[in-house]
Image 1 (cartoon, helix red, strand yellow):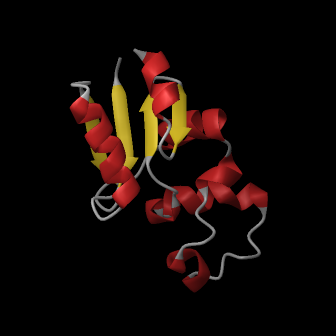
Image 2: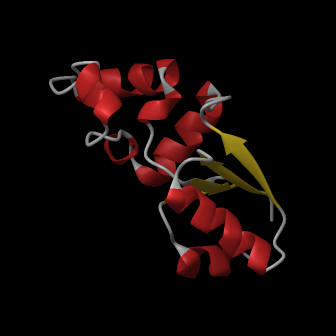
Length: 111
């Protein structure tokens, strides 16, 4: 298992996911989206598992400040590559599989 958690240190859900893996002694790599975003291929893999529209955090203050309310679905990949802080978190990835938010039942199936 090669688990990556994409999130933010100031996100309680990201910290919950991190704690879940630590408690079970499952090794993981935490990537803080404030420091480094997803690479284009990583983002494509995650989107294939989750869906582009679900990845975009439409409720965030940042989304509203950027005036993205009328962004077309075809622009979502470009928007998320340019600003990783618009991603919903946590994104937990294991190879080609990925989840959004707390999904412990799915994570248990990965081991």
